Amino acid sequence: MGTPGFAVPALRRLIDSSKHTVAAVVTQPDRPVGRGRKLQAPPVKELALEHNIVVLQPEKIKKNAFDAVLAPYNADIIIVAAYGKILPPEILTLPRFGCINIHASILPKYRGAAPIQRAIMDGEQYTGVTIMQMDEGLDTGNIIAFEQIEILPDDDTASLSNLLAVTGGELLMKVLDQIEQDQQIVSTPQNNAEATYASILSKSDGLIDWSMERDQIICRIKGLQPWPGAFSFLHGRAWKILAAEYYNDEHGLLDLTQAEGGASEYGTVLDIIKGKGVVVNVQDGYLLITAVQPPDKKPMATTDAINGKLIKQGDLFISDPAFLEGTNEIK
Image 1 (tube, helix red, strand yellow):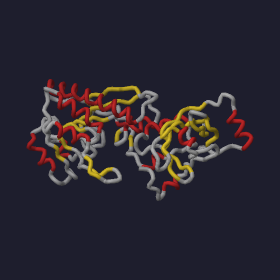
Image 2 (image 1 turned 90 degrees about the horizontal axis):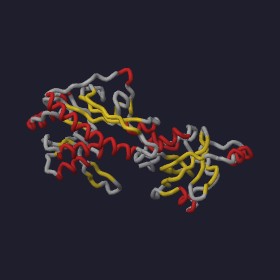
Image 3 (image 1 turned 180 degrees about the horizontal axis):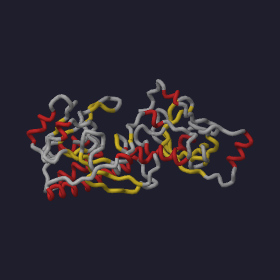
Image 4 (image 1 turned 30 degrees about the horizontal axis):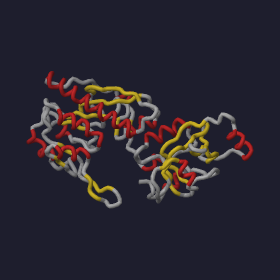
């Protein structure tokens, strides 16, 4: 049971295995995407159909006896990876070994829908994958196995998700071999006192607060890729901020400029660095914005936005949440 790209490596490992048989795949219904609103199949469905595996796509699984649909497959175990729906008790207890979940964090930290994004946004240095026995709670079940990985400085949600998906698929195979050998699941309860929650992202999470520290802003930019993307308002319209890095004003020129003209608001474009981007001020120094996506345009290097006269020294990026009301620009 899975839906997005994160679930694909685990399914692929199962398909390629000579020890296990995939009886069926359950995924979310096809959804309309893009401006043309054309129906698009989930990545898990596409892979399953390539291998002639039965695909089930219930709109709802609670209170519609979906367990009766699954029962004839006589599964030993149900594997869940980013399926996107909460399983009712009658499905959790249906297979001989129950249901196990591949979760993209080291539980009990970052339970919930956005563990990868929240870990990056919080500036964590490590994360990982946990395989857990599912219960009726939200990622509260016993831990079967986990593997820790380092979050590298250039990681964003896309790159880290890909790594964790592959790691989860490999760990799953080890867990299944152990279950088959033992004919039972050996697991350890979570320490609920250490639990944290990774709430689902909303559009408003992407709005950059320029009064934050540099590390916090950079982590948000990385963690919010690809959706909703970190953004700010310039000239009344939303700009996505795709990449930023520390800027060290070695000669104190920016400090001098601010002293002469008075302190600038956070988010002010204080300088243009030729061939690199624009410098804005934040709580603990300066950030060099190197890649952006202006409204109605493709992602670009900030230097291209400068050359196109879309941004200039003295411009102010706005953090005011009030600008969010009524805007449909952030997709």
